[in-house]
Each structure stands twice: as structure tokens, then as C-alpha cells.
Amino acid sequence: MPATAQSHRPRRRRRTTRLLAAAATVVTAGALAAAALPASANAGEGNRGHGGHGHGRYQDVQLLSFNDLHGNLEPPAGSSGRVTEHQPDGTTETIDAGGIEYLATHLREARKGNRYSITAAGGDMVGASPLLSGLFHDEPTIEALNKLDLDVTSVGNHEFDEGAKELARLQNGGCHPTEGCYTDEGFEGADFPYLAANVLDEKTDKPILEPYWVWKHKGVKVGFIGVTLEGTPDIVSAEGVKGLTFKDEVETIDKYAKVLQRQGVKSIVALVHEGGFPASSSYNYDCDSPGAGDGISGPIADIAKNVTPQVDALVTGHTHAAYVCTIPDPAGKPRMVTSASSFGRLYTDTTLTYDRATGDIARTAVKSANHVVTRDVPKAPDMTRLIDKWSTLAAPIGNRAIGYVSGDIDRNGTESPLGDLIADAQLAYGRSQDPETDLALMNPGGIRAPLTYAASGSEGDGVVTYAEGFTVQPFANTVNLKDYTGAQLIQVLKEQVSGPNEAAPKILQISSGLTYTLDLTKTGADRVVTDSIRLNGAPIDENATYRVASNSFLAGGGDGFPTLNEGTNELVGADDLTALEQYLTANSSAGDPIDPPAADRITVVQ
Image 1 (cartoon, rainbow, N blue to C red):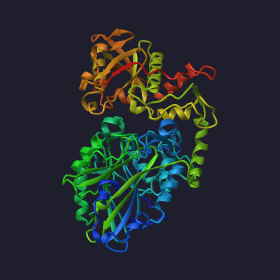
Image 2: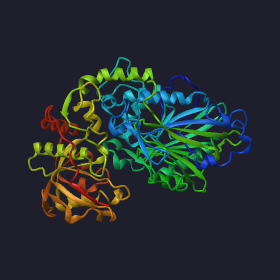
Image 3: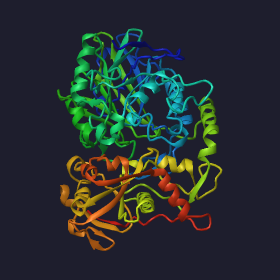
Image 4: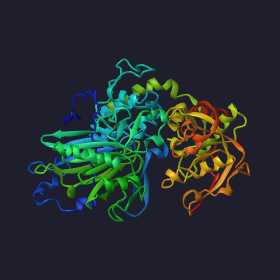
């Protein structure tokens, strides 16, 4: 039976030999707050956010939430460390944001005066992490989240990058099975519970982690249900999800909402590692300005419209977007859906008004807003000590120079300069293994950060360190070579914009010599103009054989590219970071750095 927890801060360590979790409740400051709170709740309105209601029937509960941290303990570099803010005059400006030292300070300040406060997360706390965390299998991030007083999180797809056994170790503690202990203290695991209601063991047909968790404090009860996206197997290596089944998000949430209701828990928040796409990239965009539910699209919109009205709010993630939206539930009533971008750049502060008479949330009184984790506040000293400890261990590996760049090499855009660079690196590596290699393909989701010209440490401007390369490509995928017919290669390019990728295209980054036109005025597979596809100026011959380099995730059909799994004559090479390192070392020097590629291989028609 999933456990409950009493709220207290500072709290004692909760050793979790079982997996528990909670969700974060979020609701917009717009449509919901505009509705009237029951008359008896209006007393104390001026104290909202500092204890607020709590002397009668209604009690304000603060829900602080964030998502998709991805082990970013240090401030993320370049565009990954900035957010866009909408200004009153209609313009936008960017703000440097993120870093666990600053996130801790902001959250601790936000909690002051709030006796009823919960901190929850929406998954992907680990995985695809920079070297400081990834080198140590994300033990540093779990340690930081413990210090941060995280109460509960759902799993995300990246929690399965190293498989269910490694996820269980992060929860329960213990030294790494092959690399052992990194410090004398050992690793004690997460104080907070991970929730995975829709991730089942194929043999037992039961959740591998606890499906829900209940927060309790002085008679107030809030239940949390945690799920990850049903499509996790499509975006994680097959080994990472071996033996697991991923169920429908809506059906799972509805199932456990009924369980919680039977236990007398009527205030329910769903932590959903699936997201949407707001109409604006500004974190403070009024998502409800076009109308409730109209300011956001994508999978989370459909989920929110169908999840049972018994759920009071949804804390979401996965798409790395920022939004605070109301989306009508199946009964037509507005319900808050939130996401706090990624990498610790934002946090969401939601006020839930708990009705002691009914045990439910007064949804018309819910308020929520995203806040920037600015870097103009004092650093949390305990987080600085944590970073220093792990940085000392990582320095001998991470500080080594592997190349030089003349400017920022970004990962943004349909075709990005960094995408071209990585594809070229994999092509060069492929040819070192087999001179007959014709081209390389790189999935954009595997490129986790830009390469920035400004120094991240003491290495000097323009120097690319191993740690920076690791941050760009942290998955340890191998570079694999396979043979495909020309017809299969054309089909692969069409799969970028059709099938599972039709609604949200995944445009592969391509190596030098491959060119084609992407016509976004068309629909489906027709958006890739077949007769425009050229390799070194020549049309693709559907009957010829082409040798293609790609990472092992893509070569196995990941990211919705089943045809890539049909290749033959496979040769498995070294990891993709090695390929990038070799390319940078061979093609750059302090006196002759690499220039950012032009990103002109794909002609986009809009």
C-alpha cells in the first residue's frame, strides 16, 4: 500500500526502500483566480502566499514545482541557460537563468511563511545530464534534490536511460554495480519517492514503482499520481525499457484517482511527464488569452481534456516548454496545467485552496505563475559545497581540451550548426571504420546543449573541454554503420514528418553532401520533396546501396524511424562522444578554430 507522509521542514531523512511519489498542483492566475471563491473563504485574502487562509474552513496549500532538470547542477551554458520574458510594450528580452545554487535559494525563499508547502517535480530529474552529474550516474543530482527538500516526482523517459534496475538504485541507494562507490560516504539514494503508475513489469503486470503518494499535514491531504508518457519506449533505448510495459496516461490516472477517492483523498494532482507547445516561447505568456485551452497544443492538451474531473491540476513536462494554462476538463470546468521549462531555469508557484469541509480543492481559487530562477540572488552554500565536491572528482577528466571553436555553435533551428557539425563528425568517424560510408544522420533530441565560445571555467574562450562535449552528447550511444537501399533512405527522410512524427516533426541533422527541400506548406510525408534529395549533387538511386552512420539509438529505429532498424551489414563502433572528440581534435587548433557551420543543407519552404 502506498504510504503517506507528514509534512515537516526541516525534515528527517525518509529512507525509501519502497518507491513513493507525489504530484504538483498548478493552476493559472488568470481564468481560475478570476472566478469567485466561496464567500466564507474570502477572509484572509490579503495574506495569500504567506500562510493565507488557514483559520477556518479553507487552507491555502503552496505547491512549488519544476521539471526536466536533467542533472543541470551548474548554470546551463548559452541559450540553454536563458529564458524569454514578454515585456509590457510587446517586446521580449532574455534573462540568464538556472543553476542548482540559485534554484535552492529561490525555492527556500518562496517557502518562507508557508506552513503548508509541497515541492514536486514532473520527471526527467536525471538522464542526458552534464558531465558533473552524468559521469557519476547522476548520484550528484539525487544528492542535490535531497538537499532541495523535493517531496515527490514522477518518472520521465530519461529515468529509464540506464534501465529499471539503475532507477531503483537511485531511489533506494547503494554503490554502482560496476563502478562501485565514488565517495567514502557511499550513496544513500533519494529521500523523495519516484512515482510510475503507468510503468508495469511485464511479468507481474504491476507498477515497478509506487503509483501514487499522499501528502498530509494537520488534516489536509493531497494525493499525487505520477505517470510518464506512454511513448517512452519509442524515445529510449530498447535495453533501457526491457521487460517493461507503458500504459495509457489518461486511463492510468483515472484508475488511481478512483483508488485515492476510495481512501478519502479528494484533492488530487497528476504529475505527468508529457507536455505541450504554447503559442509563445515567453515564460510569462498569458496562455489563456486566446481562450481557456486555446493557448497550448500538443499531447498534454488531449490528456488534460480527458483526465477525470476528480484530478484538480496537472504538473507536466517533457517538451521543455513554459506554460501556465487552464484547459477544460471533461465536465467543461477549467483546470490548471503547468510546466516550468527545463534545466532548473524556472519554478512554478501554485496556491491550492483546500476546503476542509469537503476535502477537495476549491478550483475556482487556484492561482499559479512561473518564476525565473535568476542568478542575482545569493548562492545556496550547501549546493556550492556539493558542486565543489563533485567537480574536484570530475576535473581530471572534464577539464581536458578536445577542440577549438571561433564562435557559438548553436543547436537551434530546423537544421542547426551544431547538428551539422555532429553529423560531419560521425561521417568522418564512419569513414575511418569503413571508407565506403556515404553519409551520417543525427537525431536532434540527442543534442543536449550548444557549444559556446565563452569559457565555462578556466580553460579560456573558444576552448572545447571534454566536459562541454559530454554535455552536448551525454548518452554514450555508439556510432553504428548500416547499409540501406536508396528507397529506404528516402523513406527515412519521409519518416521525419510522417507516422509518429507527423504532428511534431523530428528533422534529422545531416552530414555534408546530403541536400534536399523540406516543403512545410504540404502535409505528411509529402513535405520531403523526393526529387530534391541529392547526395554530392546526384539524385538518390532507389536501387543502389548506401552506407549510413548513425548513433545506436537511431540505428535501432528510435524516435519514430522504424526503417533505420531495417539496415543490414551492421558495424558497431565507438561511442558518439569519441567521434565528436576525434573530429574536433583533428580539425581545429588554438590558431585555427572551427567556424560554426552554415546550416544550409536543408532548403525549408514555409
